[in-house]
Length: 437
Image (cartoon, rainbow, N blue to C red):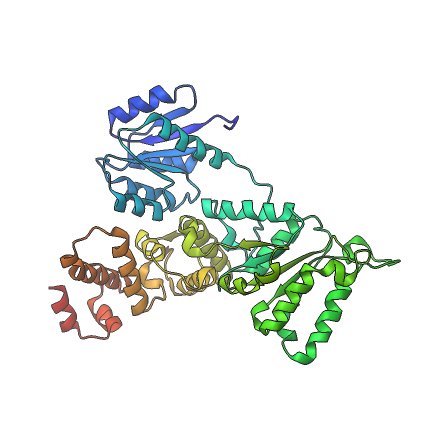
């Protein structure tokens, strides 16, 4: 457990829960029982707790609604949600939205304390890996569990002496992360060298690549170069642009580089990194142990970091406020809700482009649904995602519920204007009115 004073916030109307927590945590933590939702939000923003315990069954609103309000400004908040319901769909929905633990009442002392202690340790964990905060690295903002796990893996990769393969989907800045690895590695003062393999894809260029790579990896005997002038990291990008046999040869060379160059000539301090976008495609190189000399580090997609979405959004909004001389200060809950259920197949780049356009469109200090450059297909997919997350609507009502949620979203995008909504749907106003009635 941490040596810091442990502060817990609790929002519940259940006197039994209050008694349980007071009795079992009296020697472990300072407990602040909050009286209302507004007080909970205000206190959490002013001084975030180690863990926030929220009862799903509140008189004012359900606990998940409170959680959504808290997460708009506190993406790294650790939360335990309590419920009398033995509902798997509800627990799954809570987990998808970022709730750390979903526990059933009445609480079991040992399992509750185990879950609480783990979250407290996670809340106070300090990483030695410094994330870059400069412009262009907004996608690394946040402190959610998924990002923290990635940082833990990055630290493991850097502590060892293996070369690193960085796996990332489209729209994820693997180059920026590779630079962060270099900055946190054993030779941050040395040069970071990028070799674009796409420029060597022609057969006539292969010999030039091998000459360049071997030169970079070879010790400079009698060289007058300073440490800052020597190579520390070599990053190979666009690996998939090459033919299979060339990729195979590169991995084979890197696995056996000590023998290929000579143990006495090889600069063993240099780390090789390779960026790839297809993790499954790596399986073709498992034969002969070609991947044994690499640490495989996978970067998280935006879909897996929805709990960090508010902080990433704020960072992008601030960036494009500066770029476009805008003054957007707020994002509507409806807008945030739509983004939460978006698939983001283009990951952080897709979100960044979307925010840039929305900032340009916005005429006020509020970013609303009408500002988002979403297509009809986007809204259909988001509506289906919302309904899928619920998982408990009756199948005979599914079609009607889809229509209700979909039309509500369309009207939000059209700022309530029926003519604009009809134009967006490419139907007449009369046809729209018939669907509503």
